[in-house]
Amino acid sequence: MGSSRGGSPIAMRSHNPWTARLKVQLVALVAFNGYLWAPWGRFVCVPVLNCYACSLATTACPIGTITAFAIFQQVPFYLIGVLGLAGASVGRAFCGWGCPFGLVQDLLYRIPARKWRLPRGANALKYALLLLLVVTIPFLLAGGSQEDASDRIVRQSTGAVDYCALVCPAGTLEAGLPSLVINKAVRQDMSWKSWLKLSVLVMVIGLSIVSRRGFCRTLCPLGALMAGASRVSVLRLETDRRQCTQCGACVAACPTRARQVPANGRPKEATAECLSCLDCVVACPEPAALCAKMGTRTLMMSRGGAAAASTAEQRTANASQA
Amino acid sequence: MRLRLRVVLLFLLLAACVGLIAYGIYQGDALLVKDNAAAFCFT
Image 1 (cartoon, chains in turn red, blue):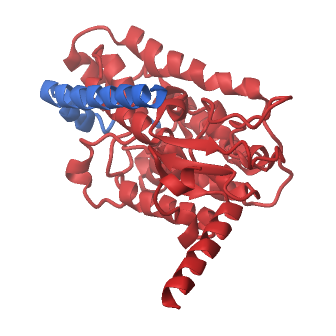
Image 2 (cartoon, one colour):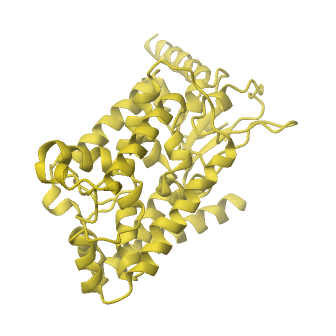
């Protein structure tokens, strides 16, 4: 079993990983929006949806960066490397543990309301948005030299038809709304695009209240870009088939419906939608039936397993004291 | 054997990504990223 080969599971020390995740998310929120190293930190592209038009933002947004490179008609080698490195090492853990807009959604979902699950087919929308509004349309509309394209971006001239300009609710929340409150000129210059983006934000807030990570699943082009990273990453989930009772707790806990139980088998490992949030590991009631591993090292195992391991550890400690 | 192959492939993938980052920085991608912090349009 994995736990015996690997190191000490986190679950031994913390029996409430949701709290641990919330803490990590809050730290990430400050790290990415604390204006701590904003003057030079925006060289760094981090795989989270965090608008770098916000004055507080300390890192660059991958979607804004891809759009800019599409307009420049250049291949973003640096960005591909960053996303590939993050995806191959920790999968979509940045989405589950680091994304500020993911934190907003997680908090909104705590509001008591009737909850419902989105159909799996809705997941396809984000791929269309990535293809059309992040890559193809900016690329086709750009044309001309880099100076022209740069001028077009910086001056925010007319004709900006891309995800950042028309859809991104993270940009509206982090950069649009604050500038609307602070800057009188922005209030006076509001156009149909402003109203469209505000409407999208309101809809996404509503969606987040009734559906867990509804935006991540349906509208986030970064989610589309990173889809499948959890399948190949060093960080992975492992089900102990001897321990799993097919109770379906992990499937119910999964915010993106990434885990599935086939009609005649055990729950499937991570699919393209897995955020590596590890909520499934927390929800699993069977001892050590489900664990998250980084290579061969066990990071976290299901609660039963953690309890059993703690007991075993305590017994060992008692024995050594005796 | 399968695990070893997976490890080798992952290592190659990670190395390729580091190479892409280095090449991107050499090309000036990082500067381009920073300079476009104003790419957002609200109005």
